[in-house]
Image (cartoon, rainbow, N blue to C red; front, side):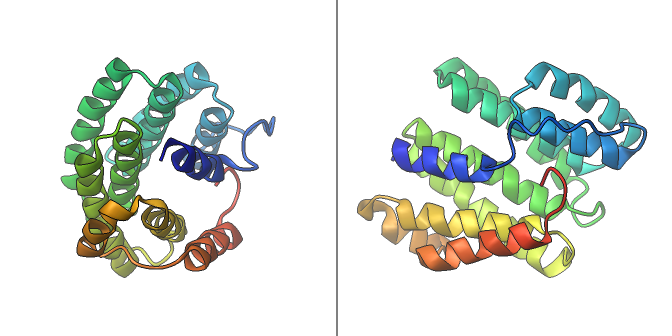
Length: 206
């Protein structure tokens, strides 16, 4: 399972780290792009300082919280210790509740919620908390369906759908019944197809 999770994580980062881009931070979109590049280059201190700037410029927007969660998720994955995992769980729970307050109002809220739950599921599975991982998958899939209905221009929905399918395909046999109950179906080729579609729509650091 850990090998599979490492492959999925590598897929999420493939081709993005080490890019060396320097983007203007004069605009909200410029800050967003620079934060993504910093996170994917594992420059966490730089990303953290830029997140403070971004949050001040985009109050109420779920994007800074999504990016902050992404940073903390990668940090917890790399460290791999229980303390980092527990800290992540507490922080991500607060972000989820905060974004939920504005879901349907702020663009990208549903997909951001889906992504945070997906990251939480991967981290729970990494620490062998499989039923908690399944719970996060359930919510990730539910919010993604809402995002697919309400956020037509958000390319991340293709990424999330692809990773959810691949996560289901790679799960141990004894958990397949649970994934079917959650509603996760599809094969490897279908999952990769969604990721290819995401790649064709995505721009910049995405």
